Amino acid sequence: MKAPLVCDTTLRDGSHPMRHQYTADQVEAVVKALVAGGVEMIEVAHGDGLGGSSLQYGMSAVSEMDLISRAVSVAGDARIAVLLIPGIGTRETLKAAAERGAVAVRIATHCTEADISEQHFAAAKDLGMEAIGFLMMSHMLTPEALAEQAALMASYGADAIYIVDSAGALVPSGARDRVAALADVTGDVGFHAHNNLGLAIGNTVAAIEAGAARVDGCLRGLGAGAGNAATELLAATLDRMGHDSPLDTFALSDAAEHVVLPFMPFQPFPDRESLAIGYAGVYSTFLLHAKRHGERLGLDPRDILVELGRRKAVAGQEDWIVDVAEDLAREAGAPA
Image 1 (cartoon, rainbow, N blue to C red):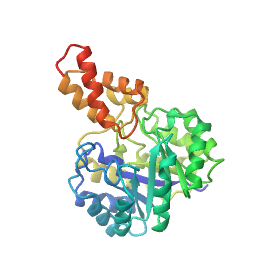
Image 2: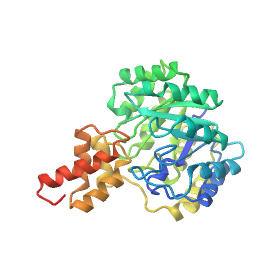
Image 3: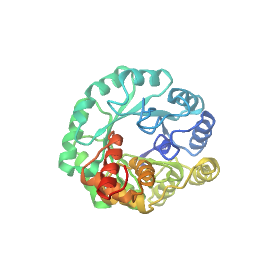
Image 4: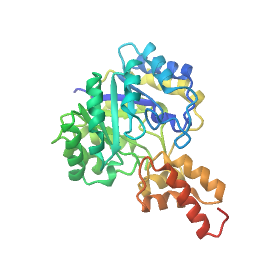
């Protein structure tokens, strides 16, 4: 049975818990370890995609273009991908990434805003890149409505389209139904999981069983919120499912243990705050911001996250976290 393509995003989604402080040597070590473990696609970028290094999203320690170059230099046959969120990344930053050797781009929009991505798909095609749609916060739409958004990306030339469980809010039936709906739009459906409800592997398995041809992982689950599906666990799971996968489970588990663990600031897992993210359906990257402002104002970060969920905050609205926290502090009579 042919296995789905696994894209490892340790060096992009993992940038969030790393506070975007990856060094070039760390990137090189991770890429070498992933290549040794049989990973065919590796995503490298600021956590919020190309151009994300900023005061709002977090400043990178090293230019992402330099990190892309270092990754490409040791990637061998593995393909280096980048993420681009329209409004943060631009066609110019995409061109610069392609010049550094990136060959694929995941063009990410909120699940209701696929229409803002048309020019970016065109730019990717002009650059000869593989152009992949990335529909974030996919739990917020019904499968049928999500398929309509995917159809727009398909019309723009998307080579594949991902269901992105940015909040880690889906359960297996939700993952399965969305993959099935998108299969009517594109023959190449992907699934990107977060572990805020402890379901990253379970949801990914459900997506694969429904026909997903691509899935994502991070070594040791290093990603936003409670992290992502762990690449080494995906390798073992695919093997147990009978898939003919190029992944080497033991090589990847060694990479997780000996390459990534030593520099991880903490182990993402479904603690009380990240569980609240999945429960409230909030963007996973809000976690550290909510913790920081909760500590500053003497608030329970869960209250901030739940209120953000009630207000339906989405990716790119990190500045709203400050407003919500200060509103809650005023209501509680605390100094803002």
